[in-house]
Amino acid sequence: MNRIVAYACLALSMTLVGSYVALSKPLVAALPVFLLAWLRFGIGGAAMLHWLKKPAFEAPMSSQTKRLLFLESFLGNFLFSICMLFGVSLTSAVAAGVIMASIPAAVAVMSWLFLRERISLRVWLAVACAVLGVALVSLSKQELVAPIISGPGADLASKNAWLGNLLLVGAVLCEAAYAVIGKKLTGALSPKRITALINLWGFALVTPLGLWMAWGFDFRAVAGSSWLLLLFYSLAASVWTVWLWMTGLKTVPANRAGVFTVLLPVSAAATGVIVLGEKLNSTQIGAFAIALIGVVLATLPQRGQPGTGQSVLPH
Image (cartoon, rainbow, N blue to C red; front, side, top):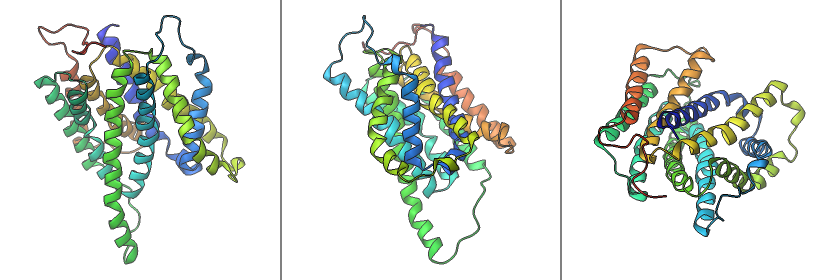
């Protein structure tokens, strides 16, 4: 695949993730989290049934590939969603943004540890730009805070904040593992089949909790607009973003692909400005510029390197 096309796939994937994260707020208000996840995997799975069939050219899956598929879904789909949604509910949005800004660095370190990818100084500089840019965005955001809580309520909120931050660190590690494991899987399976199989695992993992939430839930109380938003969320989260990410990973090393995760919080903030009417100040504009410089540093070809951006390991 052309290197530019691969970069475009990675960028579009993370941009879509950021947009549906921002636009899914009404869904979380309308549906319980586990019911929402169950419906998401179910709708996505129905759209990808024809992707489950093994192509004639594809070798049978090894036991290692099967284990990686389970881990990819458990960490990248199931556990990431739980850590992210519940973590944000226990801590501040500013803390969440700062912690999630460490995803590119986590991906780079994991790809070095587990894939033995060589990380150039320029990629490390790109990671630093990504972290700095999103951290500035997070620290400059004006939050809609709840009325000041005093007494026992304030103490309880303070005690729960550390747990929320810890859950968000877990979400960062899950997302980094998702990028690294995905790189291993693209050497054995096609992007479409990986997308369908990890969605199937996600559906199986969340089904018990989804059925529990669905029991007695009044589905008639959900507005028609919420069902349309659920359809977009399901297709974007389960089908489009995963397929785009796996397609890009077939060509791009995991540590370089990880820099594109900076577009997740950047896209979420931009969606807030364009769709939700939030204000964009000069600090945020500068932060976006720094983040984009990081992407350019990571993606421009270096002299003496092949243009395809292949990983240094055989697949």
